Image 1: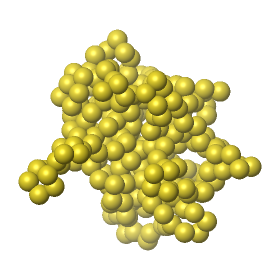
Image 2: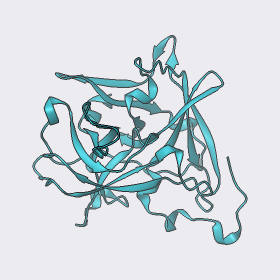
Image 3: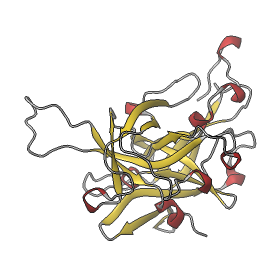
Image 4: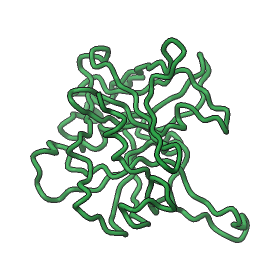
Length: 257
């Protein structure tokens, strides 16, 4: 998946905003047949590395979506971000799914994690991972209308030379900390598309915090899907433009040893 850039096109890790290196484009496959593409991001806990995405990216019975492996695109040269390779992850082992997903009192949570074997990654892999320090402290309120970013690959669109995601601006559209309509998610107001499922929803941290390292962002949610109103007149009424973002505290459960 690499490219042959000119000297001016080569990107060094130090010149790239760290948030763009947290996110990977996901391709789903059934055997050799390509199915869909989506977004995922890296989360690190106790020196273990995980890929986080929406559960429906890995399995979705209503749409008969049953991939048996995924592939992510990773950077392999810190001094030349145009160089990348595909990293394949089987979704089943001995007939059982390798991902972890969660439940709460309202039903299934549309978040899944897969542990990545670090030793299997190329030695020169370039990425950034969120940690438990990037999860929002419940004692720190986040106001409705707060500015956010959704980092992903809408309709698969991205910087095809440097293999980087794009960001969409969003704001919190429901009371953060409350379970909207009883579900384990809050709402964002943002323009999103297919392919963004599994994207991290983040808020910029302005106060210096050494625990965050070179990733000054707070991870608030995992983008799942757009919301719509069943009674909407498709000709007269515009789409709501609202989306579900699942609270990331579920990651503490899904990444337990």
